Image 1 (cartoon, rainbow, N blue to C red):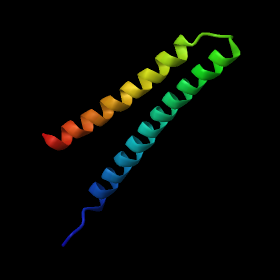
Image 2: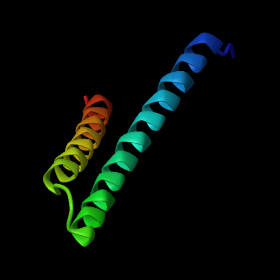
Image 3: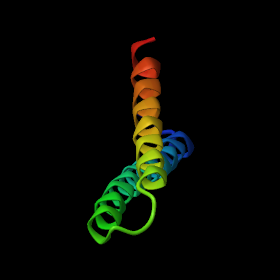
Image 4: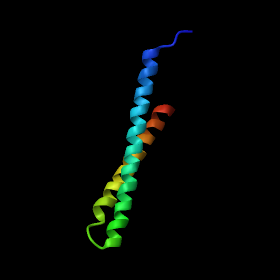
Length: 74
């Protein structure tokens, strides 16, 4: 049995980058929603921009997950 180390390293690298990107996007979404609560409590600032940013981050996460499932199924 021969292991293709280049292919294994490539899969590892892509998986690592995708994982970090998805976790980062989800974290930005959570931060956006928490900023919405902070601006509402203080009564200053707009709540629309953090909410739109958070929902955009969540939508990008969902799109990436859906694309991954699509690649697995087809």
